[in-house]
Amino acid sequence: MLKKNYVLLLLVLLTFTLSYGQSEKLLEQERNKNGDSINFVQIKTDSIFNSNQIITLLILPKNSFERFSIKFGYSKSDLRKTSSFGKSESAVAAINGGFFNMDSGGSATYFEIDDSVINRTRNPDLKWGIEDSITNGAIVFTKDFEIALQKANSDQFYELSKQESAVLVSGPLLLLNSEMLKLPIMKFASKRHPRTCLCVDEEESVVFVTIDGRQKEAEGMSLTEAQKFLLDIGCVDAINLDGGGSTTMWAQDKGIINFPSGKSGERPVANAVLIIKK
Image (cartoon, rainbow, N blue to C red; front, side):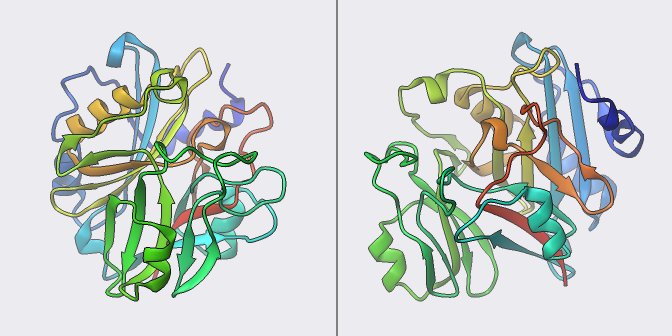
């Protein structure tokens, strides 16, 4: 049963039923319809992959970049809710970020801002370490504040490079140049779970995505299903972020706008991806 306090969100979100195959060019349609505004779309359907799905998209068109910027919110030593990161930075919206140490905080993957290392990659053999086959992608902000989703380089590469204003390693990288990339063979990828993703479309719009799961009304997706869905709606490059109980989307004027799977609602995390009004 979805939590009652979320019901009113349907009054403020564009909510519609979508059949698989009808989603093609969805991002293009939203850009054309709403111009340079930030667009929210929530999809509730029982027909994508023959399953119940609740998918929430936040679309930031490139022509909005003059008014908005994307940045990371983070904490080195403790865990905070995605909404807390958003509120502390006066953000317009936020999604949860990458994998993290659930005991002591901090990113489990390489993370730097302004050439300062926040966290190095945790040994995959240690608790909360993430296998290399998963963390093969990176969110990179250039010095010109452009965003790129790309194959991850080594920690040492990013430490020496002065070309980036921020880097967060995550993954798996799902799409690159509109091609579905090979995924690791493991239950993490093949089973349906809640997912948080970030994608860029052919017009360089940035799309925040949450796919709810572990609920009767929202079954979640395997990573292959997530790849197919993101490609179908118009994503060109896409990366997977931390999912499961961490999957959260927050908006300044709406609060939590997806349906986190945890019994207590949104889970505290180590970092988040934020949209900030300039």
